[in-house]
Length: 263
Length: 263
Image 1 (tube, rainbow over the protein chains, first blue to last red):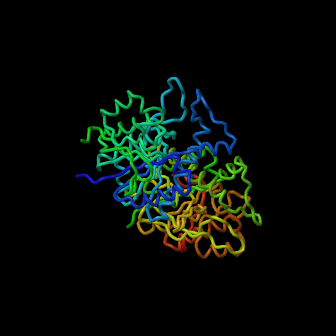
Image 2 (spheres, rainbow over the protein chains, first blue to last red):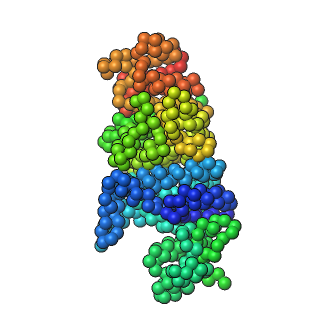
Image 3 (cartoon, rainbow over the protein chains, first blue to last red):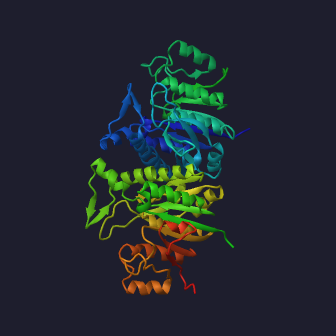
């Protein structure tokens, strides 16, 4: 049997709150077994752009990653946020190593093709170098990955952190029984968006389509669930979605997603 | 006999010129054998501070790294500059990995003690994790190190890049016959500051003291030579100081520093 590995993804709700981040990283340090952390960007890039007097480039209400925005994203994601997390973990004696997709060529991507909208310097992932990540883990390092990928031609690209976590989990499945853990501000996938206690505790391939048809999975949850099933299709064993208690022994109610009915 | 390793340090004159940087990195890619690149920060941090409306904190004409300045330094050194260099090398098929002193805990430092001046978040290096760097090199990675170190308590610190290069070279001496290569805008240590052709081609411990007494090594060259001899004292085999031709086969006249008279 393969050893178990957890790929944990955190977003803005934790990153932007100093106290919550510190608390989360203490729990992450205690989490046993091989692990990888993927972090999002949160609002830090927008805040820095504002300070620098850079106006966001918006098309049809969507933010475009132009050259200026990309520079700010690299500075905040690979610089500020990544090194903050790495140093806090090192303080906890967790031997973290911060990585962008460029470092060791771990995440290769293509620039998203222009269709209705030109998103600019945004990456669609082609491959994750699981061998390299496994080498780091085998030598005792904990990879901390920021949401930046790179083309074969060395162009850095802004890349969705949920998708990075999904693809990393899928790549690591060659070496480990891999679990993907999405941590966000809610307890899980909610049946009723306004009711925090309406957590759907288990989703599989069949119930997923029903939930889609009923319109219960919509808006922001659509890409998260798509990323979850992309990982499951690539043999990730299960996906957990919930709040930060997910990496502790006292888990709140949360959503577990498996490909096939677990019953 | 140990294999040979080169630790190459570049500063602002190359980093700030897109064309020169690209040219240098092409040469660096061609440089045979194990190698490590250490880069300085140049003026990027000052420029970003200006854009953000942060006024530099100056005491007695010296810039102080306060909390705001440190944040800008982390973003520009570990983010912008480091990932730019890594992605350009990856484009050249050089498997570069960007590292701050926090990543893998490779550079431990203490906050510089307050004496006449409180320099703020500035690091004095305590140790370099040569084992970890050697692991990366042994697995085919080329470490690209930015001038940030970290305390045992996880505090990131702004750190002199020349000193990082010197300490890294010294630490790698356990595994390699190590050479330290300082690349800057001049051909080498000049006997007469205004005469580019007055390069002193060889300096050893004896001639170093004579040059100090004569006042020929002064100002900006003083710390560079101190870092050079610190490395030599720790058994680095030689230090080369000169322009970017130093890593090519067509070297301009330059300065070679050895601990003992090479004759």
